[in-house]
Image 1 (spheres, rainbow, N blue to C red):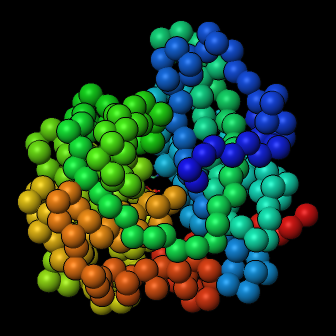
Image 2: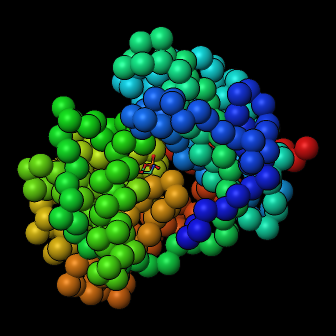
Length: 304
Ligand code: PMP
């Protein structure tokens, strides 16, 4: 999604409104202190195009609530209300030719330094091509993930994306698709909007959240797929040099899906990524509803 789309409808203030009318006040804490948390949720058409399903909706809701709790943003929606709000917007904007991406945001509309905070949930929805991601080129940024005591990376707060934005600007100048941020101990944290997976000797490793990355829902899914495929999977600290010397590297996340890295910094990766390809084939079969899997939870949204 290179350029921001402007779909005709947005969910805001408990109902659908037009894109133009979805506004907030300039004095809101959402604007002046960047107080908002969000989620990204993919909607996939099934392989026979019969059904559109939101992937891991409840897991996203639970992380949304954790992010809200840590940021002292009152979250008043129940899961059922959240599901209905997502379904309402999805039905309005769905298009059989394209998958979609929902972006629910909880932001502070009123309040001052965390007192008397009033928050609202807005949801935007964008259409995306139904295609598997192309291989990507990734660099290691000079920007760092701050420590958990500075800016907790395990939650999905807007503030966490300030450094990611700077890293992407840095990376674009160097011809990279995305950038990996190290943490304050010089180990791999995550990319600007996805987690990092490396494969060495047939085994998949990814940094745990305490290394400075989001508690990723895609990584949990991949862990479940690896278990059933008999592929070793571990969460452990990863040095920069391990990243650069890995047999295979990928970025994984809701929007990124599972994108194989074919160049990391100065190094062209081997042309084949057998372990990642096996996981990706399984991932796509499961999310398109061809092969049910307990780690891949789908919530159908029927057309209106
Ligand atoms: N890290 C960051 C910074 C992200 O923005 C994302 C995307 N949400 C991820 C990791 C991957 O998380 P998830 O698999 O839950 O989408």
